[in-house]
Amino acid sequence: MIFLATKHTLDRIRKNIEKHLGERIILKANKGRKKIVIRQGVIENTYPSIFVVRIDDSNNNPTRVSYSYSDVLTSTVKLQLYKNHNNSNVS
Image 1: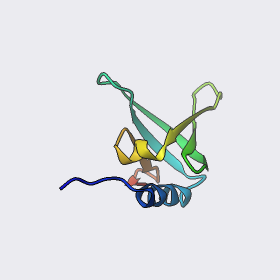
Image 2 (image 1 turned 90 degrees about the vertical axis):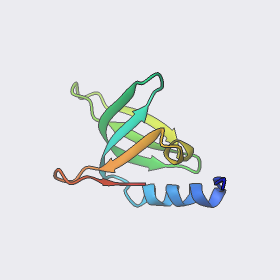
Image 3 (image 1 turned 60 degrees about the vertical axis):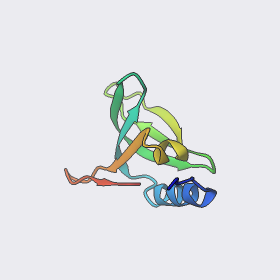
Image 4 (image 1 turned 135 degrees about the vertical axis):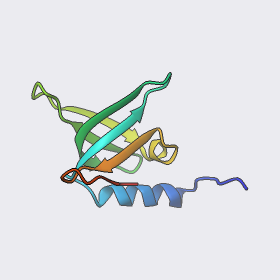
């Protein structure tokens, strides 16, 4: 059986991320060639095709990164809520 992502699937992911706007997360992004970046940040905003995360930097220079909902669907990006050492998946 082949599963095809529909617009409805991506909308569900978007709505789930929207529920956690402003919350602290742990972001794991697969950058290819066995390089995985793990950072902490805050879900700053959602748009129809992408969402924006403000990454906490030790130099007080916040960086913003954006990802598409299809990145979450394909597990290229994984988000976990950061709550007092009790992590739960956002999507």
